[in-house]
Image: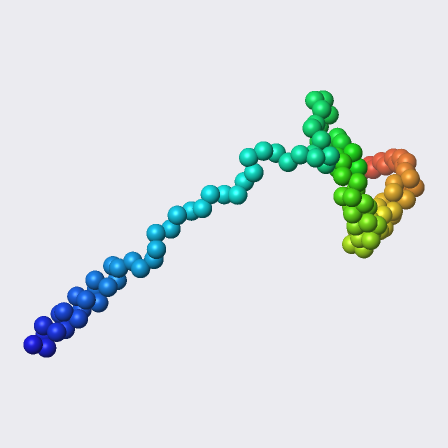
Length: 115
């Protein structure tokens, strides 16, 4: 009797691991607009031979509010100022020594040994 109850208990325990109580999941549709955004900040690009890398950032961004925010960020960016100062400080000795390090030397040496 004890063996039968143990077998029934183990069988019930094993079968309970096969039960899935999660509801069926259906992925919702993505909220992606069907058209491109429009407005003055999204002016259509004219066909030209210039690449994006050749365009300056002031010409690349058309929104005046965004340009004002970028100007404000550049003016108040201490890390950028520190990086520029470090580059200038690192290149100054190299540039200064490049103009003064021109040297010209010549030499002649002879040696004779007795046989």
